[in-house]
Image 1 (cartoon, rainbow, N blue to C red):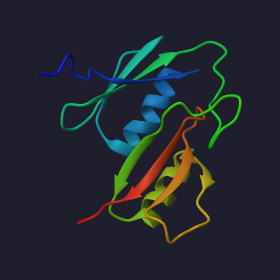
Image 2: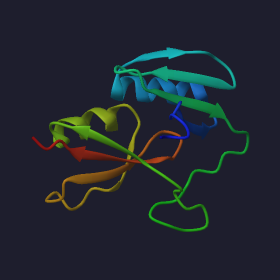
Image 3: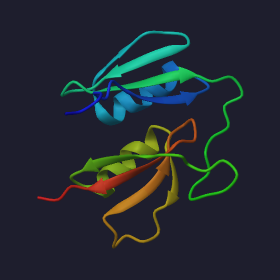
Image 4: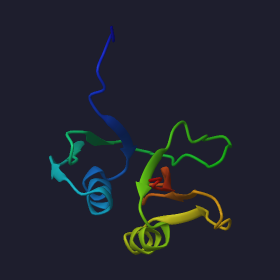
Length: 121
């Protein structure tokens, strides 16, 4: 029997509303809240939340003094199409040179690493 159920994944950031808007464009869903805490309610019932963190220091990928701690894997049917869309929304590429892999690494506008991963059928 599980001890707990995952409520939300929470990202610290300098501007919760802006980062929630970025992920709403990428993942869909509905943004709720303003100020220090904003939630993105995703299709399927999951929640991604964003918390204001004064003095936020983005993690570094793949390692360093501010190691990444965690990252999000976002599954997409076409990585080239998704890449164009997320870059237009403000994502930055970190590790996309190897086009033979099933994943590519980016940062969101607040500097959190995430991967686009090719959907497997």
